[in-house]
Image 1 (tube, rainbow, N blue to C red):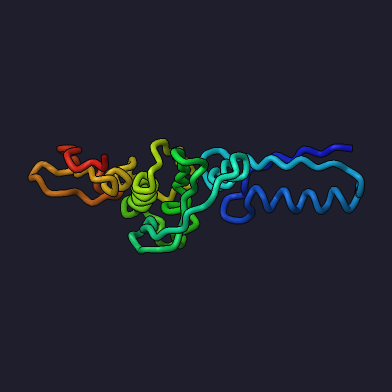
Image 2 (tube, rainbow, N blue to C red; image 1 turned 60 degrees about the vertical axis):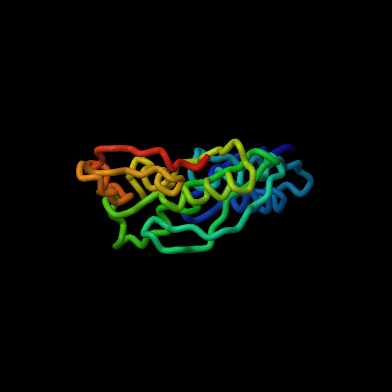
Length: 180
């Protein structure tokens, strides 16, 4: 008998790999001689990086980036080869990183996701796969753009806040300082 387990993660609780381990354990308990194939999958949110690292024998790069509320925290991105990185928005800007009482999309930012992309570029990656699910944000990516050097200005030439609350105040987008 052969089982193929292909599961996405369960938001904030179990990773795809952990689900596969649990299913394998139970299948082997009932069918000790069965063959198991595990295929972690993801929809672009939590678990996307893990699925790609597993499929492509990639590696994780630990680093520090801002969470959705602007606090620095330990996080990571992944590299699959010399030129391809994977940045998962959930790793820096994910919903589980924000306590329920602080979940306000007008105040949260994707700035940390942009920081991860900048670090991947600085390490030599030239292609970045971005998994944008699982976010605690609704800033249209302006936080990530700001971390990559984009300036978003209001009609008076002042930078807007890089959160959902800043979106409606954008008058000018200045890309002169964009990360090369």
